[in-house]
Length: 171
Image 1 (cartoon, one colour):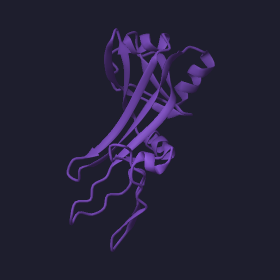
Image 2: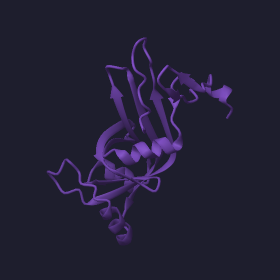
Image 3: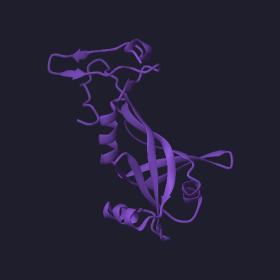
Image 4: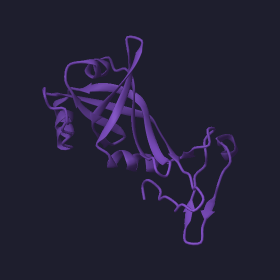
């Protein structure tokens, strides 16, 4: 896809004290994060939201997770998240961060499919990453792997007059 199809391309925003590379914008005018920036952000967080369709309704639930080899790994108990994994259903995952004062932020979205991890060797690999659910009132003994088919991210970048230039989210 050409830059013109994504919107106006911007090379560099310069001030007297710094130069910040800007990204190509999408059709909504938001800056597109690179795949590597998305992966770095995914590796740096612990809590995100898994989304899926359950009986015709969209469900979005928080999970503690690890991002490993292009997949989201999380623990769950019997219930809707395990149901979608056992059915190998389509699922999404999102993380984000926002600075209300400066009206900046970023968001990363994974689209893929979920599956329960049942192979003992693979369960031991999951255990190695030490994902411990914050909600620990009941055991969450089942592992779910959400394999990414697509990873995208956006960065909302605003520079009001007289305000410092915010750093990129990864850097």
